[in-house]
Image (cartoon, rainbow, N blue to C red; front, side, top):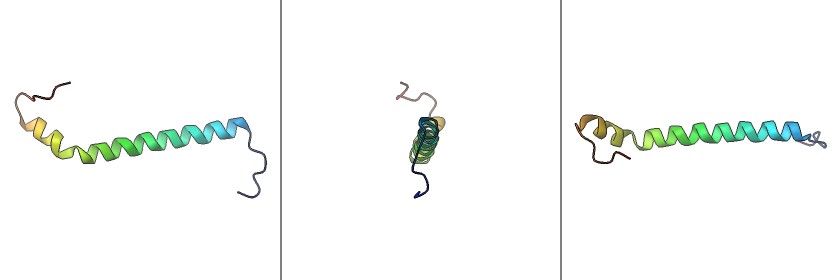
Length: 52
């Protein structure tokens, strides 16, 4: 990091985009595993009550 004295807006934007994508994927995976039991229950239920 010591060598990067000048960071161009393009590099900064690319870093922000990559970070945003990683956060989105991470949040999706966490939500998937967190609600896995709820999804399984909803699949086993003929008519789910919580249908937003």
